[in-house]
Amino acid sequence: MDGDKEPFGGKIDGIQKRAARYEHFAAIAAQAAVFAAFACHFSPASAWEPTKPVEFVVPAGSGGGADQMARLLQGVVAKHNLMKQGLVVVNKAGAAGAEGFLDVKNSKGDPHKIIITLSNLFTTPLATGVPFNWKDLTPVAMLALDEFVLWVNAEAPYKTANDYLGAVKAGGPNKFKMGGTGSKQEDQIITVALDKLVGSKFTYIPYKGGGDVAVQLVGKHVDSSVNNPIEAVAQWRAAQLRPLCVFDVKRMPYKEKIAGEMSWSDIPTCKESGYDYEYLMLRGIFMPPGVKPEEVAYYVDVFKRVRETPEWKEFMEKGAFNQSFMTGADYQKWVERAEETHKQLMKDAGFLAN
Picture (cartoon, rainbow, N blue to C red):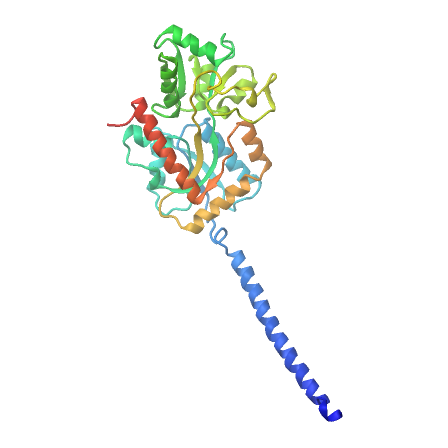
């Protein structure tokens, strides 16, 4: 029977061979783990990062919604060390924002420059014929959509949108002044739409930014404005301005009390008051043309991390933003649709350049 068994020396050989095989497989597994860690470390989102401070262009004046958001982003990035290099906010509001857009357009391939957009991304080239289109830039991310609210001075007698717009109709053309940011831009687009809904006409007074507009309304130099929430919340909180309605299909969801017993969710939609019109504005990020995918991915990652910070969440609630976030193909498709919408709005308002 002993002849049927493997000799003891043969067992040793077999054990050694199996051990050698295990060592071989273990080495392969270790190499795979190292490769995976290497690939993870150098994933597209982290393969590139800025080597100098990044210029953050605002194609609008100081104090407005875009400027406030850009400076909030600057502070959040610095506080939480989300970038090794800082963001440097630069306002380039000339020619209704064309100064900023053309600067970024002409910075082809420069990953150290980004721009925050508002509706002048569409309205400025349509109204002026300036040689610029959003397709000249590289989409990065939609950060949020901004609401528009009809505001009056808190000392005015109007308590509802019907009160005020009824008075505008009864007063006749050009008796009431609407303050807004820029000419042939989003504030004036909304004003023209109200002209048609009311059956009268405002005298539209353009200012450099939403901050200026709020100050002018507090000073009673205009009768109303359609400022974004973030541009007028301080004056509302101080009981200097009164919101009448929001230009959206539904009320804003924020229920924290802002002024007295009123929250953003207490402001009715303009449609509830019989004025069926809605308008939301993009707050998004673009880069120059010709940048690399890994450079775009870097900023997408940064802004995703910004959205997780308490400061950003507080800012979104304070400014009553619609918190939509998009990147990639979804963002590009949204921008394409928004451009077509603005072409029609500008045409209807008679604002298209010849």
